[in-house]
Length: 119
Length: 99
Length: 135
Image (cartoon, each protein chain N blue to C red):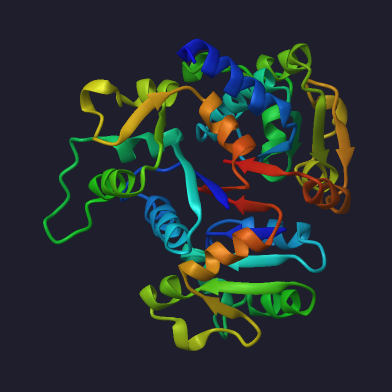
C-alpha cells in the first residue's frame, strides 16, 4: 500500500516525530511504500540542518534524511509553515524539499492511507 | 475505522471524545501517553474495559515499555508493536488521529 | 514529454480521483495555531475538487463563535475566513450538538450557517470519509 504521513510537531518537544519515524520504518519493512512525509505546523522543524542534540541522543533530523536517502521517500516541508518558523532553503537538511500545502492534499489523494502524528 | 489516541486521559479529553465517536466494530489504538489509560487501577480502566466489549482496543508495546507499565495492561487490550500499528492502518479503510 | 505536459497530466490524474476529505477541528482558536493552520489546508483543498467537509467538535466549536476581537492580542482575527469557505464551494460544515451544549453556545451565536449534528451522526459521517485530517 501507499502510505502518506503528516507530522505536525517538531523534534524532541513531542513524541510525534519519533512515532511517525518508527511507523514509517515499520511500513517500509513490511514492504509498503511511504508515498510522502509532509511536515506542517511545528513539524517543519524536523527539517532543520542546525540541530545538535547531545551525542547520546537520537538525531531526529538526520534520521529522516537517511530514511529518505535509503528509500527514496519524499520529505516535504510546507513553505508557509516553514517561513513562519524560519525554516527555509538555507537551513534545510538533506533529503527535504520545501513545497506547498497542496502536496499534503495530494498525498491524501494519491496514498491509500494517510496517518497524522501530532500533539 | 482505526482511531488513534496519543494523550493521557488526564491531560486531554481526546480519549473520551474518541470513544464517543467510535462505532461498534471499530478499532482504537492507544499510543504515546494514551497507553496509561490501559493500565490496571487507573480511573479510565472502566471506560477501556467497556470499550473492549464493542471495539478492538490496542496499545503500542514500545510506549508501554518505555513508561514502565507493560505489566499492568488491562485484560482485553491487545499489545502491538510498530509493525502491528502499520497492519491496523492498512486493515482499516480509514484512520483518525484524536490529537 | 515536456515537464509542463507531465505536470498537467499528473494533476489531471490526481484530480480524476475524488475522495471524501474531512477536516476535524477540535481546538479553540488563538490558544494554539491549529485552528488557523488547519483552515489553510481546507482552503488549499478547494483547488483539488475533492468532496470536502469540516467537522467542529469539542473546543473546535469555539472557532465559529461570532464577535472575535483580537486587537488587544495583536494577532490576526481569522474568523471571517470561515465565511469565505462558501465561495470556495466548501459548504459542508458539521457542528456537534453536545459540544455546543457543554459550552453553552447556541447555534445563532455561530458566524456561519452550519449543520448541527449529534455525536452519533458525527460518528456516522466520520465513517463515510476516505481521508480524515485533524490537528
